[in-house]
Length: 118
Image (tube, rainbow, N blue to C red; front, side, top):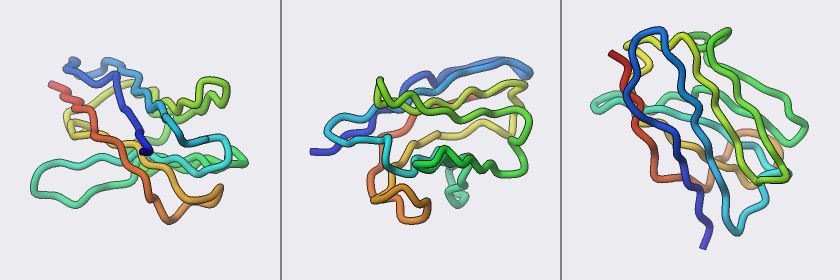
């Protein structure tokens, strides 16, 4: 049973920082694309950042310069460092892993961690 477990969410003031973690069990993240997504109730899920197996990274424009995605293959964990947080960053954040090193088809999803900025 594949599990992705997110942690690190919470409540923070505007301008603050949080680091989200996504740890995988029974799934090797090193050779896969991993992404962070977020969703607000009533709105579509939004891709925030992705990192593929070659560690090519992509961000949505709204977080560029503030968020950093990284991967620790030894720990089989992907991180999302979020700085200078804004109220519009408030959402449930999910990590997802793809079938391969190329980004696109995210098959495995975590349960989410809530981030609230006020």
